[in-house]
Length: 245
Image 1 (spheres, rainbow, N blue to C red):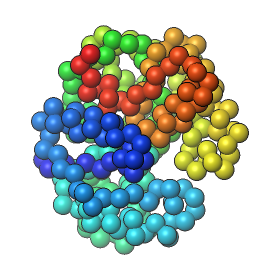
Image 2: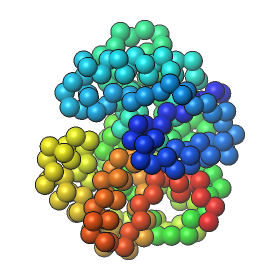
Image 3: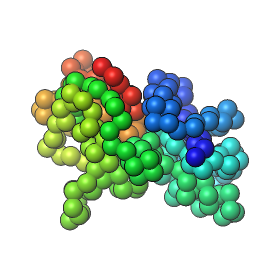
């Protein structure tokens, strides 16, 4: 299979180590990865702010960059969700439909497409999972507490196989962190309060490292942790799965 690697703009600019960890992890798993250098934003920020029509150029460029790959893999559930669910603003050509159908969040790709759970990682720390809303309720990376479904979690399935890791159970296992993209700008006070609640849940659960599939949510939590000098580290799931500590 030929895989196109999509690195969201905020990861590229602020967290390049997450992009590097994603690439290294996929290559360790024997995947033939290519990085289209002409890629830009998928258009999610404009769409989230009510300007979907203005994002068509970004969406069309995304399709042009990734239309020739068997799969597209991205370390961000919210960006993947946007491509899958909001590229309906484009004419549904064969290329558009294929891109929407073939894009996967990283952990989803490893678990569902490659069929792997143990990626040979080692990470001897107490870890709490932040289950981001887009990944959980949009991409169905796990069961939701408000639904009467049997419990499952792709993130847990992968992390449980990491050598030395201790996964901690939170009191509120899938509550929103308050980031919500532009929500954190327009509703700053509510966003901050929600983020602080999530951090306290991790602290109360004896967590050392918070992880998840969306670096945007992790960025929000990391900013609050740093401002309040709290004893927590934040790492994307790609960094943990790529770790050999």
